[in-house]
Image 1 (cartoon, rainbow, N blue to C red):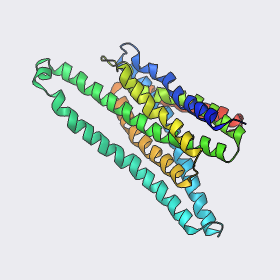
Image 2: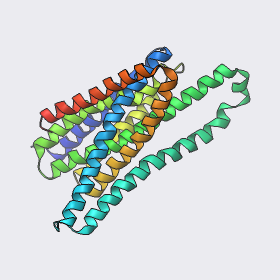
Image 3: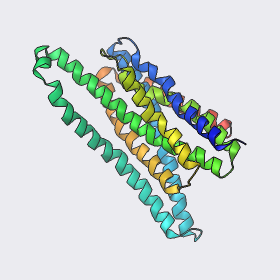
Image 4: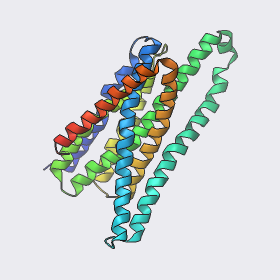
Length: 282
């Protein structure tokens, strides 16, 4: 048995292993082909996460409806499950579209300053590329953060229902998984001429990994199936959005064959990590 404070410490460790994958972002200058491969590798990991979170979210919502239909639960539970699932999708998809539009509207005047224009077209192109990469990495971190919040809820709720061994196994499994998620966040930033600052990488790690700790705190105090479904679904919607952006960017960087190889390796890494977690009994 572990006490609540030990649980919080382990929940923080599970979330912040995401920092182990972020150093990928400070690799030296890479060729366009290498950038495309790393982009595809990250995309493969995100595709795995997208399928995982949406299937888990839909399964929970569907189960609530089936229980209501069989008379084992009130219809309000089934309806709230569906609202959480589709509401989460709207938050993930439309929310990030709004975020992208807002950030680019604010950045364009800054980029097109007289000083930058005087430095030439190549300089402007590099600025736009860097800002697009930073924006994409931030959106990935937001999507993964929503996913990790639901993982934290699962850890906390396993503890509060006195399934202590399950809570430990979940912590170990999610800690391993979050390392690969760090690669997913860092992928768009790898090989930039202007490397991301340590402050920006730290912020990405906090946004992506911090919600695991926050979810552990709340899950250990309060059980909510609605919140669990909502955050999983929002994560799935966000991952759909950023996956489409990453694929579009990858097609400009390298060949379709390199993209497919990278996606296959990233997808396989996610599946094998999940398989190991299942074998451990989580």
